[in-house]
Image (cartoon, rainbow, N blue to C red):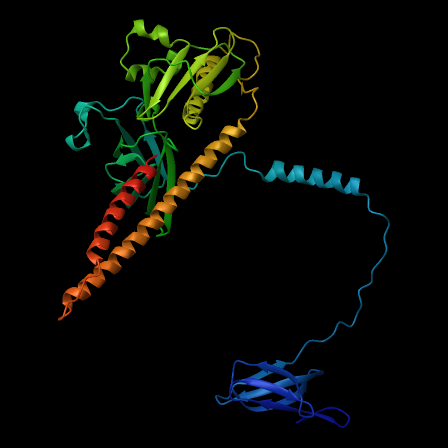
Length: 436
């Protein structure tokens, strides 16, 4: 019991759970929980500060606590200043931001002192049949490429037990997708050989191979390094006889005279093993056929730098358009760098399209994709239902067989046979609609 003011007293109660409760006329006005279980408690004044709670626990530890905080003694004085010049503030902000950017921004990315570097060597031509193992050959048709990955550590110490995980798009078979490199030094590069084989059909959704390396640094910290490797175009398609007719067309304009397509796609021409007499027919037109898929044709204007990509499948043109743009940029950047001393100032190479964005074809492709996914989901649900039905029928038949006085099967054997046939049909349908 302690006095608050005049005849007003409060009751301070300490519980065995470490809680302290303040009561005023049977009403709880304040409560708190401490770190210790007090056996004695008293309210005292120290250094002119009233309301301090002094507690003593069973171990003889004294704790001085303060219930609540003092209200602010001074009020905030709000002064009414003149109107703010926002234009001057904006100008000052831009000036200070420019100084900070000029002094503090790095000119190039900061590379860690210890980092695992991954470089790739990708051939432009496919592997020969005599270089492939027998398990990767399928008759006379094969399409495989060997990629060399080189790992090197930029730090002083070497790395051990580096795990290299590889991820390729569906349709590409990897001879090994997880490789453990026992030792990676900072002086010599450790080579990892990966062989990919194209076993799918149709248009690929990506043309890259992703490699992720996980390792532990010299201090024991887990780290990862990833890279993407662009696979050669010959792994997905091959040259065929030029085709002129197509349903979908895309036109690209450039500000440079067009080169011959045989010069842009030298790897594809070499892969097809064509002689010099056959190169003439691929000067202005070239057709690419995906593995058991559609054909995409490139037509080049003889006078202007205009390229037309056409195909019966709208989605099949993405890879050829990407390859054409990338090879054009590389071709003209190499030519302009070699002729920079003799030629004057020239505008940069640019690829534009004056046609409207083919949204209708895009929406049609998206709608077709959604319908295919819905068909796959419906087939999977039906297959799951039939599998559950077959298990239920098998349990009923098993109970009938175990019965000491067996009765009629009630045509359960017919239901089991019909359910099995439906399972086989749904499985074949699901495999058919799941193919790309």
